[in-house]
Length: 415
Image (cartoon, rainbow, N blue to C red; front, side, top):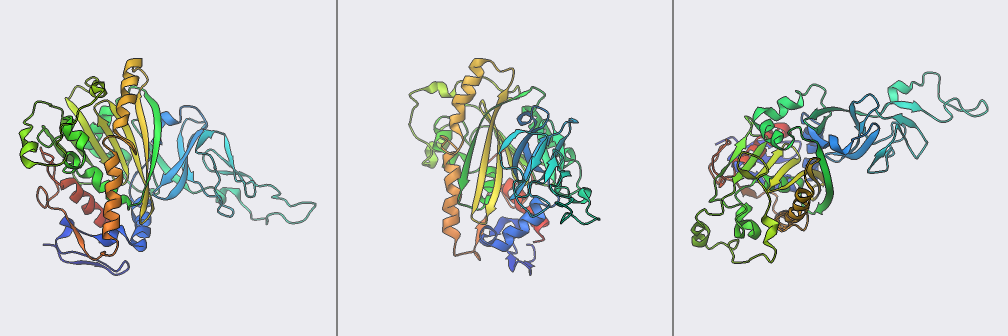
């Protein structure tokens, strides 16, 4: 067993069992949340910003967040992608008010300071005063008052940002193994944006990220998955982790002919005799040539790439407070998809999202946990399904990737 870890600043004690126990305090405490913003989201991590396909033209921009820090992402006139904190260098007001658009510059509504599409200060009204009165002092230097810059890298059409200038390049951060799975989807075919959905969840962000990494729950919580053979633990599949256990992918090889008695004998709620009035919902085609029909991939600390049959989406997880987070879904296809393929993707998108046949439960289960633990921060979660270590497995009835999350979380948080 590990020694008990005590963080004096957070007044938090981590149990001696280590990553197989998680104190509920980390989901409840404001000090913990604030340290996460500093040590994780504004620390040595690459954070998903948006897709290159969302900024197709010069001077396109999109607003978003790194953790709870507001940022603007741009495609600048020189062809580079840039990002900066959406906060005026003058008095701290929000600079860009719209969610997206196209502009060569950004003007703060408060005092009309003007910034270019890289966040550099270009204009200050009445800098020289009015009628010889007022104005900025002689040592005023616009170059020292740029917006706070974010380092940006493009990974096969996914834009990532970091505040850490010394962090390894994003391809090294993701690694070769996880890069393989990302490049299944971002494979060089131009991406087509099909739409967005957003949902607020009244639970800590880490409860949702745990859920994403938890392949064990998928065919127990989700009646739709099990009933219609989309994802069952009795199907062939596994969990892959990068060498640090930081990122993960859970994958399933669809097989409706596997032994259903596994679920019948366990008498679990998720095995039912429901049928579909329109079974074409589960039609489609082999999306990729590797036989994988379902893949859920997470890149630490807050982005998920999903393939569920022919529905493809990026999920961006945004913390808002200790007890609230937001999930932004970006649904995608390919520019060379046929009309029939786009129609099928749109139909299968009903599986996911805030009210999806599958994902609805994921949006609710975290809130159920948050409500139940509210007065028991000293108690702990138990995470030993599949063992106590962190490693890839050729099966999915394991919590190995959750333990991998907490391993890296503890390192970054000094716990």
